[in-house]
Length: 287
Image 1 (cartoon, one colour):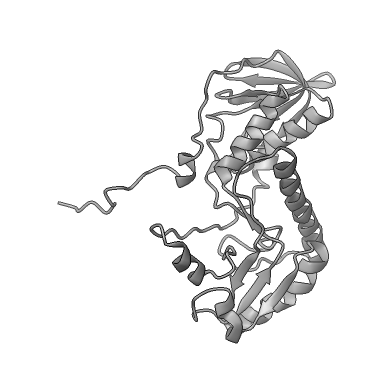
Image 2 (tube, rainbow, N blue to C red):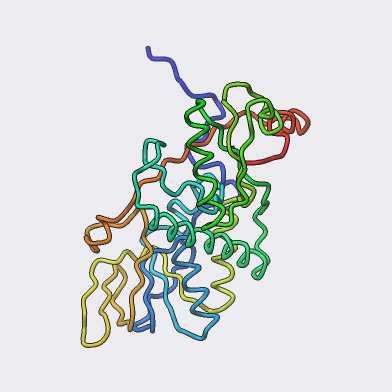
């Protein structure tokens, strides 16, 4: 008999869902028309709808599953401000044209500002903190590579990045495993599911139609607008925003080819006493 590898308290759902569990709720009707149709009800879709609503533009959000089903409530909660730009799926640095990296980092910097602004303006309670990030160097060579990135990180993303030599490493992490590393001051962390719930509540306060279980099955040009087919009816729209990220499928094949995988990892422990947790990560940074 194969032993059960899971602890008796194991839960097969994300920890974040204990605070907000994705639900369809009472299904909002798919309207017959909207100025803008947004495909995808994650962070991107909701924040787009929110910005449009603030500017008096009618939008509808079309989500294939429950509200918050996807990566928006499953991610690690670290807001990097762009430090991961240029990292491949394996974690190694990808070969990207320097000028392009600069433009992407600038966008990432703007995204950090946007999150900070939305949380403040919408009074979203999601444990938002900005203590920075420590990225350990595996070797002396890796440390040198990190040091070479400082200039572009600080110029393009205003990262406030600096190097921590091995002899000062324990100021950041209770380990001697790494060969020093890089600190990125402009980095934060939040509760991803509560941030999602805050965006959803903000959209609802402004009367945005957020339609769960309304998977889009077709998008066709009709005159100067679009006909958007869903599993719960069709609507006409002046513009369509695709906000499906990693769930981008065959409906938009050109965008599907542009999805970029990014490696992300989380290490979880049993609940630790505050003094022990603080001794392990003295400054409370993400690592």
